[in-house]
Image 1 (cartoon, rainbow, N blue to C red):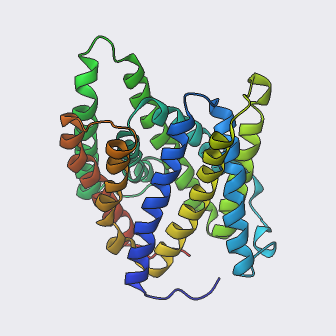
Image 2 (tube, rainbow, N blue to C red; image 1 turned 90 degrees about the vertical axis):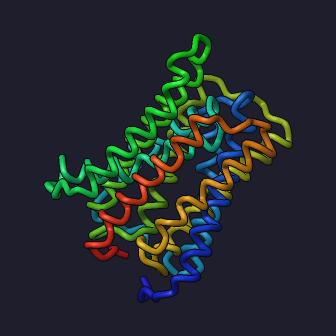
Length: 298
């Protein structure tokens, strides 16, 4: 790995680009969700994410050298949790607006902060307590109107899947925290994508469908967008401190909101607008507290 450079503007621009690419991936997944089985979507998203990731590794002269690992079981645990999170996340976005599914993903940093206390013996600080309170209040505000409805079973299931995806993602990231002491980011990303590809392929006997050229194009784009988003986020964290990038989590929610309004014609609900600052505020607070005291390992 090359030395880390302090290039905050580059880091911020790459973080913004990663948000656009991630939204593009979610839009593609939602667009095909009514006709393509979940496992088939996961397979294509993961398979074609390999292309930008391997190309990036080759450009950095890390392929295949960086794939050597001393923690195969650690990779398996991280990738298994990540694969389960991807299934849950895609199932959630099929039932919810892209913006709401993306907002629920912001629970992960707070869950990581609490998990660090419970599993890693870290200190339960005021920052973490406040972040947890903000996020729980935000989720309650988002979900409460549908709990009072009579025909919102699909949305409630979507909320449950979104929360489950955030919990699984937090578990995967905590595993990354452990194995990154000996493993490179390239190997962690590569093995994760390989496992999710195989997990998606394992659903083939459950029944895949023939897809049109347009649908196939969206599936391929979901993988290319997802792989490129991962690269941009990795580079952003190399060029700028998390404390600089955390406020741009708010900006990253602009793209899912615009996608819901312009592409899917879904209006913003008042509960989403009320939950937005609470959940993002908690996520940003957790990111600040969790990373400022300890330099990033790269």
